[in-house]
Image (tube, rainbow, N blue to C red; front, side, top):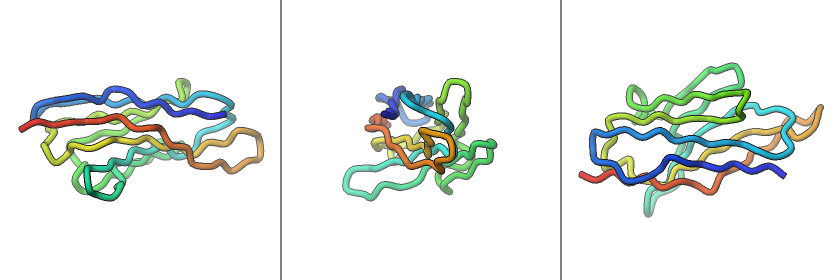
Length: 121
């Protein structure tokens, strides 16, 4: 069994910052890509940022320059540092990781249950 647990969400004023964390636990052989998605009320889930096992990153346009994704491979944890937050960043933020549970397995995508970020104006 693999679990992803997000933390760090909450209420923040516009212009503020938050740091989200997502820790993977369970039977893990290796973790490939990790990422963050978000879903605002009434909208589809969308990519926020993505990071490969080698540390290469890519961001949605709205996240560039404001959000930073990073990972700690020893802790099996991915982070999302968010700055200059705007009310339109309000959403449930989900982490995802491509995890192999045994040698030779390419890995499958696992998702956390999400953490709510609310940005007040």
